[in-house]
Image 1 (cartoon, rainbow over the protein chains, first blue to last red):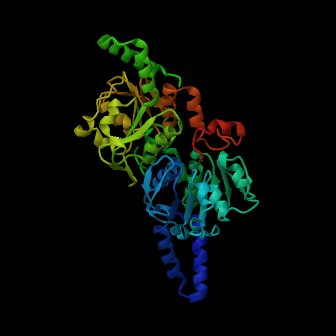
Image 2 (cartoon, one colour):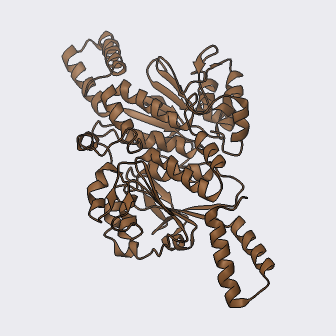
Image 3 (tube, each protein chain N blue to C red):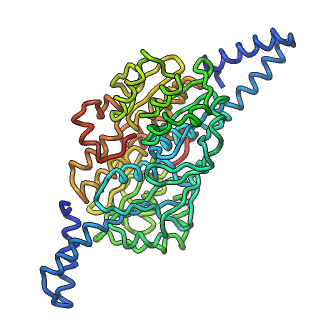
Length: 241
Length: 241
């Protein structure tokens, strides 16, 4: 696996911190940390009651198409299950506080975000570090990033049209774009922009080539996805819908 | 509600059959049937183990954005729950045989289709009538339509690249298109082609305008969905992600 810029930074920083404290032999530490990094990339999707179905499932399905890289992808929630705005009950895979030790944290959206930004118990579960983690949001999930202070006054961000006014109340500079990236923080808006958000994550963690293979695998036939056998081969690492 | 061509045909055919049998007063029958039609449009999404997550949820989420029309949208399966190919367990809303009395029946896809086309118990649950129902499939769901005889030898259809060879074994004329419509039967291929399939359903049941509002509501911001307030108004009948 080609170490991403993010991953390499983290490894080197951790190695450097560790060496200062303990002064153990450098090659042994780097080897151990590299192996740990290889097999333990944690990606968390944050869900809550009244989430927008497609804003969980598009991210989930796309991320799960990345095979054989030891990624642990989980849907996290406050309870054992959450209910979508259309009434679908889904089990969660872990508690919200697992987000704090994840490499990537992605907030979903839906009418439920309006309650969550007022919910101190929910908000206090998070202790996110944009300097160490990749953090993203779909649609009105950006409201939660603002409520958590991950988005700060003056930051550029995007959101769903119906959440623009509310996001501006946090003094965020709301722009009409599908994906806004500021360092390790990205906001996406409009359900299908989940493609851009996931593409950004895969590019940062692996490379551009894999991100394109994954996104290509869900395009309409004849509009990005073809019957051409060469392309099938490239897709065999992804599911066969 | 503007009656679609499909709906009007069905109403008139049923009225005509009924009158022949019973000779009850015509206006009373039409009124009752019209009210029944208004409030009871049944739309079924067929799921099974090893389904492709996004191929259920994109159809489901889009269809659920149609509000206030009395649509009953259900996910049907053989069991109380089905498991997606990524391991997500979802409860089903009813048994497969409800498909036979539905106005619209949409087959999802996934590796599971390869087992289902060999599964006589599964196949024998269906008694579909393309002359009365709208029937559609996502990706390799077309294999099930072929196994059921809804797609017949010589018919044009589309499917996911990895299922082309298998669909051709049913003597289907497989074409590299995202949506193929033959009367009341439509096949779509490539996950995001669910948009075209659902657009076709809404156009047939309601009208083109509503279908466009629904599809527009999931586009990336700045690429079909705008912050413009006029457009927000049009979207207020759909959820607020």
